[in-house]
Image (cartoon, rainbow, N blue to C red; front, side, top):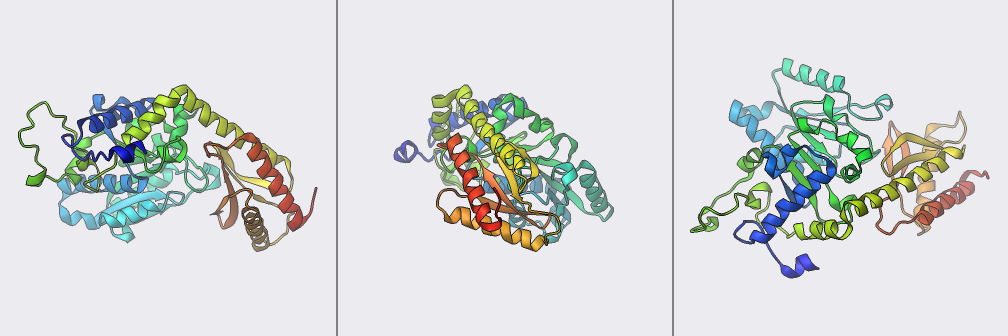
Length: 383
């Protein structure tokens, strides 16, 4: 309400110096909380911006990578540029690649396996890149995900290369806790990093932090300078940051005040307690699933996401098992007492329990488990 009521539109420094400089402050605060290298902070030569969503951040960084390559290779090279992601990467990356002109045939979806925890393998990336180079193509952009949408999988950042974007939309919030920062190991090798406070950081939609190591790569691709936007007579004391040149749209919301209020209200200690409480609830749920022989955890839990399914007995047709899991999920959601989503992994229907609601308590998680057992009993019997 504060952000909307003030109705600040900080697309340029001169439109609102306070909003622009507050945004610089809070993105640097967030970079420090996540333990990101100083190169992503303004003092270190990089910097951050608050976008509306990861989708916007993806398009902007893809455009920056594209234009950086075009400056070396010429405009015709766009038809040879290749973008890489894993089969667990959010679909928005394929959409973003199409928007910036990458031919659909030049988007590589790299296979992941259970052995790697459904994270990218450096060998898989290397093999794909070498094959494309041999064909005369230009490796452009690689997305590494920390906490994939479907399974919460983690790509090993340090082992990967080229324009490297780290998508930590969901799990990046956990990195404010020292015990989870290991998942961002190698971030100093990246060109850009994004995370969404509106997912797991008590911040209202919409708010996505995007950090870049080289802001000029971003602004070169996105800058506009029509006569009616020139800072005529502003003098030499003006901040060089005009956030209109860090995003797709011209106008923008005063997002910084939302994140500033959360950080000032809860502080680092309060937010760490919030994240850890959710992780503890997910740990409890995972142990409960493991203890019931009718269920299985299909991939080791990362953060506060548990992926599981009814296992039943050996010899049951896979389609029949999938059907039962679909019925189980539908029954739970139809009860009105809980809501969960699904994912399809290696052709198997998987149920996902994500703990992340601001008002979720352990009693709610216990109630969900009792509800699952109740509905499982109705479907397949058991104690």
